[in-house]
Image (cartoon, rainbow, N blue to C red):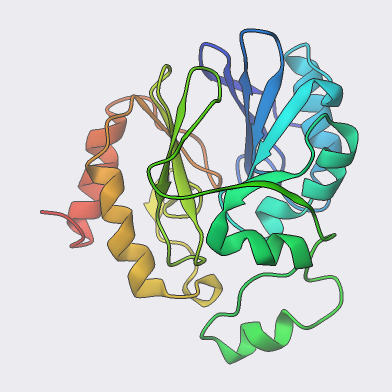
Length: 236
């Protein structure tokens, strides 16, 4: 598997499918770990291996935060919870029901509606330990602010780790093949809303832009993200 990438002091990107799908580990002062996103149903072994690379074990994980309820983010959530000290996941209140039932919210695409009903397209239902809303600050490694960026799903969130200045975009923006793009339209519950709410990412302060899909940007990150948003007509 691709090696773990350090994004800041105690902040790590764990590739679970090359750079195409990432989870993130935040190491607390007491040595415990908060994970953000759990990849697909096949990601658990890579998450465990990634934790081992930073000297950690699944039992060190005390919290699992999901940016939203989709298969490539919640796929291994139940397994991570089972192996860890977490009682369930932390997720935005508007996506909690989907995590609990193990299937994503409906989209406007008829094709996706049909596909989401097929066996194997969901994930193992997972308990929810806590819900969050816009503006909340999680007690994660010195503080992590929650920014509600709906559209990809109703409860999609982006996160900023305050001490390291790392932004986790979730699926608001992809950075595939060194090129920022929007998430695939058919997977979004409201694609125009996805684009509008991403504007908040141009106003926040951060040092590193970390993407669930794609490698991080750690040079002029905010300016680069803002440039993309400007070209797309989302911000001026």
